[in-house]
Length: 362
Ligand code: SAH
Image (cartoon, rainbow, N blue to C red; front, side, top):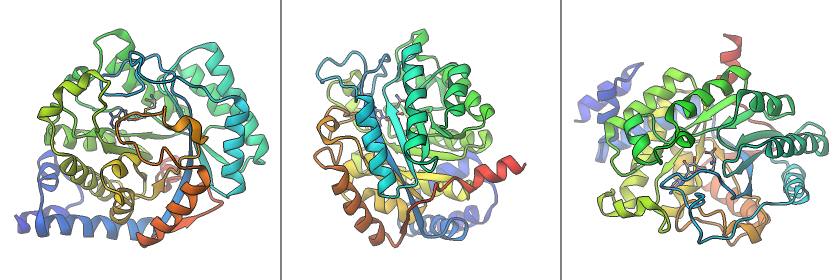
């Protein structure tokens, strides 16, 4: 096994079966994988981490994804929508504390008023930060026209996880209606890339029905699509969602966590200069989960800067960490944590994916 794995790690390209072998590695072989991914990160990115201050500005959602705690059908939570002033205040906090960028995230809604509101917020955030704050959007599927308006208003990165690139699996974890179409999600990712966004996607790891071959397919898709940013995290059950009925068939949480670290390590080796986020969901399983991800390949962390009183209501999954903290707590806690992971937080820079710049240069 060790020999096979060493051989695979020397290759320039991985096949699906190579990736499955890497995902199955344990003991020394697993250590080798992590050592290699850490080396790649150090060589191409350095021991650096950039912050994206995360503003979860609304949990109102028009979709009913079967895994998600803020799905429309869940009546067991208080719905909220930050006021524009609260959003701007959070953005100002990020700016004053020299976070290079923020990320605006919410449930998925499509309407002229949502489009206009976000466009207006983008203008105002650019204004209050002298154009210095980088802005990532993560507000789901929209028309190409809407994506373009937001791009023109100053958003330059967009995160849209495909959740799974196996259409059969995708259909099992979403309702079978037009609102949850696999092909539209894929099309949206393409619109974003064509408009010029730094484009990010990712999947959940350890979903019911998911196989290692599915995960290998996910990584190969990301490589082929030529993404700039990757956000992947473990699937974590939420008691008030339909998918809870499959809990019995899931991998133990620790194994989902381990598989996520391996996915991060492998994508880092495959796509050396992209931005990879250390997902918050990792920390729901392991108190130093994000730091572990930073050590083996991730270079982006998203401190939560949503006003404290709303945090409990943005529960995508059970046991979501840091919902009791304030933005100030998150910063000092994270800074200490990142240095424990032997990395350094870079302030006052956007921290764009090197991959994106190279992609543009062709
Ligand atoms: N709806 C927006 C973003 C909000 S949800 C969009 O799709 O653009 C952000 C991410 O949380 C989702 O993409 C999904 O991958 C993740 N998520 C949702 N439910 C989850 C769960 N139960 N466990 C782990 N991650 C989950």
